[in-house]
Image (cartoon, rainbow, N blue to C red; front, side):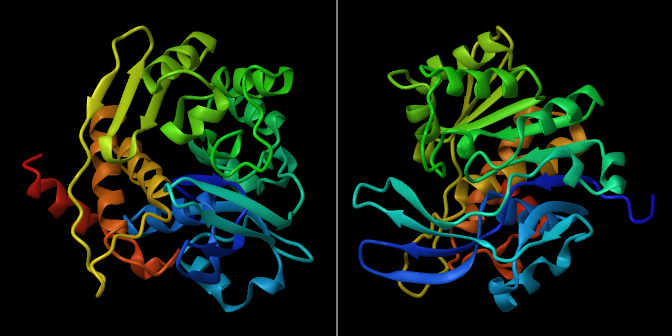
Amino acid sequence: MKNKVDIVVIGTIIKETIVFPDKQIGPVLGSPAAYSSLVMAAQGVNVGIVTYYGSDLGKVFNELDVLDKRGILPYEYTTTNLLIYNEDGTKRVEYQKSTPQIRFENIHKDYLEANYFKICPMNYEVDLDLVIKLHAMGKIIFIDLGGFGGATSDIRYSIDTSYGRKVITTLCNNSSIIKASEEDLKSIIPGKTAEEAAEILIDIGAPKVVVTLGSKGALYKIGKDKPQYLKPFVAVSENPDGSLDFTGAGDSFGAGFMASYMQDQDIRKAILNGNATASLVIQRSGGCTYDRMPSKERVKERLQQQNI
């Protein structure tokens, strides 16, 4: 295959307006798929992306020029939403337009030669059958639950519902690594701690689970082993007002994780790389742009600063 990609990211890109309690930004390029792709590209990974987009995305579409774009699917419009941050730091998403579901048949045939796939939808838009078929092909599949009932989902189906249980069971049994934030798990597996939720995901069938814990860092669990915790990295704002911008932090963590995991298949090392990546991304504002994303060299320097 010509220009073989290292990893394929699957999920919709969006035209997003970010609404904070005191200000509004956008519309800008957003979504887990967009952040994940640009972060990995900045760390030297050759990334292919499967997503819909419309001409209404405008010039911000050019940010994706650093990616292999053979898998991008033209459509009459781009998924459009409002990302609303609440006073307590939680967030919700309001969708205004949504593109069609992404199916296995939508994956560019050349992309099926890749070994790694990162499934990171916004709102259930990646067909479960796509995940099943990739798993049957022996692919290494990283799944972010944020768009399968977590923080970016419109209607959040928990495992207490028949549909929610079906979704999570299918994903756990057809993945290599399941990733979720603590916030995601509050709606997917309500009433449980992050550690308890990770245990449930393992029991359902996930081989490995990674949970981001915000200011508390991250945990991971492999099979029946005890969960392991890693502290976050210290971030120092590079913005004139001294603020940190947490938009895209979780997606940046997942991308930094995969950039490392593809090299060494070491989950602890990958989490450290994810933590370092996220700490650098939140130091700068600017939305989902390639220039905001830290290079492999900057991440390595951050790791060295932490004596790792």
